[in-house]
Image 1 (cartoon, rainbow, N blue to C red):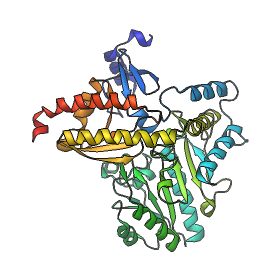
Image 2: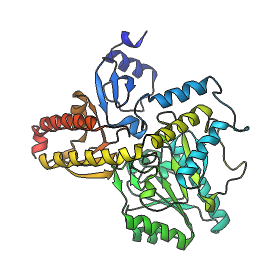
Image 3: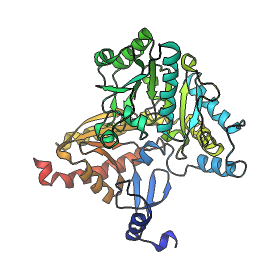
Image 4: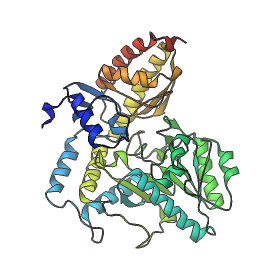
Length: 407
């Protein structure tokens, strides 16, 4: 059977038959993408402000990524990390330039990148802090779905099913420096933070908080880890969100790094550059295809000034969101940096807004019933934003008629 021979109901039936019930899906099957748009199996077009959950930073099927992958797949698909890999070294060099000298380790996902950071921090604790191993992370954070990264995640809903979780993690309120200090003990080795919380609802850290964390880590001989899985790769108008704040010791990346091809990266500065052969490893991490796509993504971001575009379009989209928040009483608190934006939604109407916007051809994301998240590609244009604002205005006008919105 071909895609055109199956309708949406067919795909749902096949998925239920053959795929484990892990995901709560929206009722569309996406089959094609180009730029800021995707098309479903029924031929309907959507303006995509989800972008693979902050993955498709260059939009869908960007020519630079397509060309890099097509060329690489004819040369070398996979090679063991027992040997040197030119694409891996090229991507590591590009990341070193962006991070002012950090060295990379590549994996397959953000969770794996954070696992690597946890291991590296624990090695630092063994060598330089009397065996300390505990990591302080933040309430409302998200760091992955493995057991260790679930334990590091500051959201009970992600943890409850999997207790007992691994030892060595505690959470404190975000943007509360005193809480971090109070939680620090002789067991503490690191502080893990998202400079802009993504899955938690797009909450930027304050400058004072991030500077305080850096100073506290320096004073107490702790490691500062910045999770850039969602906010990295240019999303906030700088290549790393920490570049708005302070320099961490360890950085983790994934999502947008290769523009849609799976990859993760853990970067470290000299202070924590402690891995030696045998400490850590991966079979597929840093494979030539992913690294070629990563190099093409970074090169495109820099050569096409997409960091500046993310800043300009982010401010323009912010203005549109502020206008809508003034117009509709059930949304408020527009926030974010660059093309990483969110608004609060009252009465738990987030999922309703997402569904209605989708019916009108706009893909949005509700991280929880009280939050509407928007993380479009860095190639976004003013015309795209005007169209999205018009669709969202129509959607909100419809939702405003619901009894729940008038409560």
